[in-house]
Image (spheres, rainbow, N blue to C red):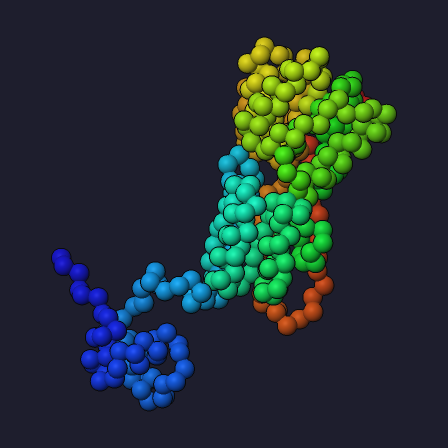
Length: 345
């Protein structure tokens, strides 16, 4: 069946007897047209079945009053997909639509994504900022537009807004204490090559646990955040005179990569090197040697961030105090670190 011809502005102009320019002004919400003509044009457009082709209009002309932007660093091997699902579940019940942006750990793309999002005039933004300093410019842009903002998973300390994070410091300290309790004394930390709120907090937790045991870090390697970075970290360790006897990784993908490379080099886990990650992704459970990790409640992170933002969007004129919600983590012990010792320091 041949589809019906698309109704154009000229069709409406011919039907109403007004100029093409006048029809365009009415249908694009411009001023300078009398009420009687405006009504006639609008009624004719509806009767003929006219629809706008949004793609031909500049993004600055598109106002999306029931949309929320969600900006995350990456999606694979992380807890972010589950967080996004929880955000969409909560906001979807209120008929909000989600604009999802993934910047792949690129600060420049992060800024460009946020700039493009703000041109759409969203109702609010939920954002996991990449970098302590490099993300600051984008944050100030959001604040300047007075767009409701909630930080999720990580935050920028100098920006006053709502946030939902986990206790990264205590989570890291607990897993490093666990490694030390098994007699490990040469502990390495694999972390990102860019400073973020979470990387700083987890490194502080790593160092605090060592300090309590009167130990110093064997080494801290800024390698990245993905599986390949974990493998690269092991390569760097083999350039040293000896290996650490335990490695704590900033996140699970790093731990998975480190495990793959250690096993490829016939290093026994946990006998030779104990290994632990942070996040609680399924990859840790199904690894060749199941990995000990610190579990973040991704569902709760997304739910609480969505509820905080919803409260801001529904009450734009109320002076509501900013909330900094911190969610506790828990450790799941698996074969990569052996069993839980009788006494935990």
